[in-house]
Image (tube, rainbow, N blue to C red; front, side, top):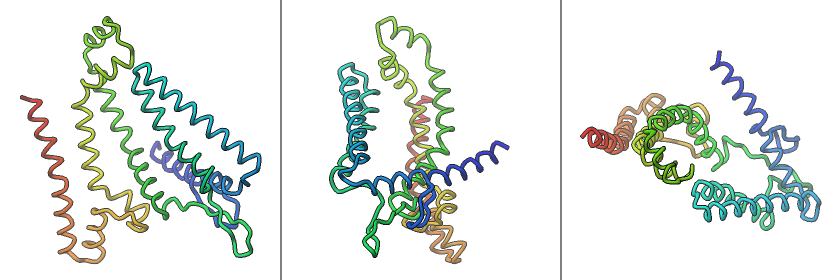
Length: 258
């Protein structure tokens, strides 16, 4: 039942957020509706000025928060605020300069919406497929990291607090160094998974639109075109690309045991 609910929820989210209708029709997907709506705004209209004011205000707030985090020596606030401010600055630049929004001029000179085909247009298709993999692996990573954080010795945390450390300092100087081996294990597992990813590409695009990966190429050559030699060669390449990562992981595990 939970899996069935997940599939239904994913379908509903796709329809409401990403689906693209023909350019002549109103867009029902939220992202495409916003994208086309931004393109239809006139440079001197109230909506255009409102978007500029909102983007500028949020960007200034994020930059101010980043400066605040730098002065308070809280790198989490600094990095997080800067991470949010950079794309906002890009959006503000595009909105003030070259233009932003999915609209093109039709044959009669009238503006026609140009929606984004999220699975077919690059680089959007690769980005959204990456997000699919991240979403799938988030639960696995969170469970492992949660167990590692709970295993941090309480004595270390209490000693840091007695010395006057703040919550941010405790996390970055006590908790984080303690769970570095766990983070490296998760990173290794995800690197191996990314190298041999197959099902997401196979189901969503079948390797078309510039999204081909080695595992899907191997499947197509070996089991669709029956070119067993090329398929076997791709399998060997895939195996050799994973071996160095696995070797580093095994070496680190042996070092920790010693």
